[in-house]
Amino acid sequence: MNRKKRTDSIKVGLINARSVCNKAALIFDYLTENDFDIFLITETWVQNNDEPILAQVVPEGYDYLVQCLHGNSGGDIMVVFKDNFNMKKAEAIQCKSFELIEVTTTISNQLMRFLTIYRPPPSKKNKLIFTIR
Image (cartoon, rainbow, N blue to C red; front, side):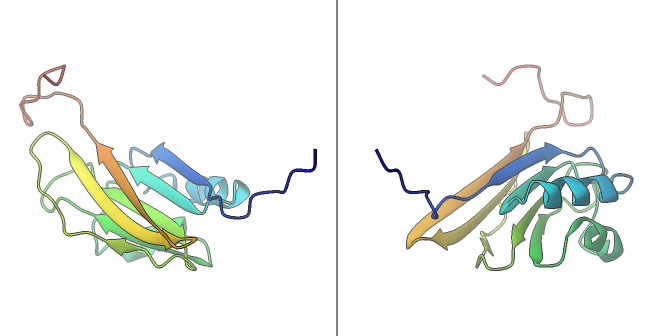
């Protein structure tokens, strides 16, 4: 049997960085060595104005979108993607128990939706319980 290699597949990765500030080079290397098309990063711990730090994570030929919770320490989600993807970020949804970024793109004439959700561990500050009911 002669099988054709699929050319319409994409390679997606996810990492919980727990701060890209001190791991930018490692994340950059991991992303490029694995040639991810889309790479999702939770707990970036950066804000929109941390451009120099974000630039250290994003290789040439890639772009990114960030969902920041202004005024909070920690958290935040970043989507890094090859710049040939026309990635669009949906309007932010504010949730009390988790962080969310929703992005869409069209691949092989199919609309693809990527949702990245980060749920922080329970603490007195966020008033989360251990399990979601």
